[in-house]
Structures are given as structure tokens and as C-alpha cells.
Length: 317
Ligand code: FAD
Image (cartoon, protein in one colour):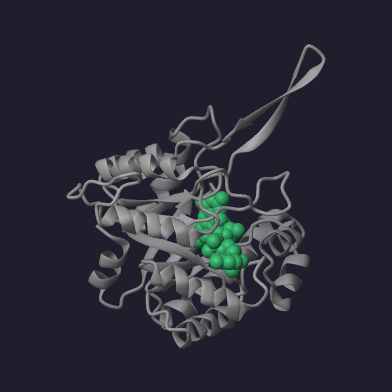
């Protein structure tokens, strides 16, 4: 079932969902199941599975460094199929522009279509670690909007390099990313919103937000999006702060602000166990307010560990 159908069926009730990252190459999928199992009691209608950018590895060989390119966490579509099969829950693979040609994207989407996976998150991806700016690969999409258009073409039965008509139509429900505190590269929030509107006009069915720690940022974003003519569901993404290092790391990587009271609470913690507790309590307060405001879904970034998401969900669902 599509994410938007789940939302419509819920009839105003806030749903619970979460995002997982594939295990590192060479690790067992059981690791993932061990993190999913404790969250299934909260009945997530869908689970997102991220896709990692490829990266360069330098391997020493005969005194020289051999450069290899690899994805450290492969298997997104396979994991989606495995989870769907094991738990009978819908899954949402994250599909990236970065590192994929349009042809490779098409093959991936065809796999999803055959597997009955009919939700996808269409994302650009970040720059690779050695790059200052994002660069599309030859024949890849520069922005997520192009990816949304390609997916919508498949929904119309239009495949690449194809002149014939009457092909099997896919039926993807498409999610895209939104940034309550603006995307780090965007010159202004207003410009970023215009680009979000372009993704929605190209066929995106819903938006999932970047993490935020101040609900006012989300509420203002939703209002501004409506004023821009964006009328699809905007799902808030919630990340429970888990270690002291997040105070520097999250603003640096995601260009988001942390509220003073949260910073002070974290700074006064004597260890990361206490930080984890602060993170859970903050996320519970955030979630309760969002739930009362009638958000369609509370979507949690689990980052491979489910104990804190379980602690939050058990107070809400
Ligand atoms: P876009 O919508 O393409 O926007 C990127 C930037 O380009 C923005 O600044 C936008 O304003 C600008 N822009 C858009 N169109 C134009 C235009 N026509 N001209 C000029 N500028 C333009 N990353 C991963 O690698 N894997 C994941 O699984 C993953 N999952 C994510 C899930 C969520 C919910 C979110 C919020 C982010 C996720 N990301 C993931 C991170 C995401 O890939 C990065 O934030 C990336 O930098 C931007 O992706 P986007 O899809 O928002 O890009």
C-alpha cells in the first residue's frame, strides 16, 4: 500500500514510522532484524531504508595506493524486499541521484516494481566525501526533481530510450525531502521552498522533513509551504539526540540549530547514558506536541539503534 493511502486510511490519527540504515557490507541482516523487532509492536505502516553514497577506498598494494570505489552499506532494495516479506509491512527504499546513471536508476525501479515495492523516497544525495559540491555522474540527475520526473514517467509506462507505447505502468508513491531550516546549499528558505514546490509539481506525493529540535521551525515550515502552494502531507522527521558529540556534529552536518535548553541539558550530563535519556525526553515532548497538532506520521531516524526510538514510541503509541 502507498504511504499516502496509509495516511488517508488513518483518518487523522498520527502514524508511527522509522528509518533504518543497511548494515555495513559483510554484516548479517539479522543485526537489522534485531533492531526492527522491538519496534514492530507500534505497528509501523511503512519502514524507510536509506541508501549510502559510494566512497573511495585506498588499498595498499606493492607499495602503491590502489583506489577503489565502493558502497559500504549496499543492499537497500534487497533489504526492503526482505523486511516486506518477513514483517508484512510496506517499505520505502531511498533512491539517490548521486552515483547512479538514469539507466541504473531505471533498473533499480524496475526491480522495486517487480517486488511489489510501490513507495520510494527520491533524493539527490550529498556530495561524496572528497567533493566540495555535489556532482551528478555522467548521465545522472543533478537534482531530485529530475528523479521524480523519471519515476513519474515509469508510472505512465514511459521507459528510457523507448519509442514504443503501451508498456507496463509502475505505480510509485513518491516522497521527497524538505528542510524546515533550509537545505545547507540553498541561498534562502524561500528559494528552497520554491524548489520543493517544483518537486511536488513534478509528482512528489509527500514530503519528509530533515530532523529539527524546535517544533516551531516545523510549524512555520508547514505554513510557508502551504503559502507556496504545497498541499501534500509533510511528515516530520525526528531524531533523538544520543551522544554529547551530537551538539557539534548535527549543526555541522545538517546546518540545523539546537535550542538552548536542550544544549544546557546535554552539557550538564555526566555521560552519554544520561545524554540518551535527555534525547528521549526531548523527542517525547516534541512528538507529543506534533501529535496534538495532528501531524500525519511521526517518522524517527533510528540510525541503526532502536532502544531510544522504542522508549519514545512506548509513551506515544
Ligand atoms: P534537491 O531537492 O535536489 O535539492 C538539493 C539542493 O539543490 C537544495 O539546496 C535545493 O534548494 C537546490 N536545488 C534544487 N533544484 C534546483 C535548481 N533547479 N537549481 C538550483 N538549485 C536547485 N542522503 C543519502 O545519501 N541517502 C539517504 O538515504 C538519504 N535520506 C534522506 C532522507 C530525508 C528525509 C532527508 C531530509 C534527507 C536524506 N538524505 C539522504 C540527504 C539528502 O540526500 C541531502 O540532504 C541532499 O544534499 C539533498 O537532497 P534533496 O533530495 O533534498 O536534493
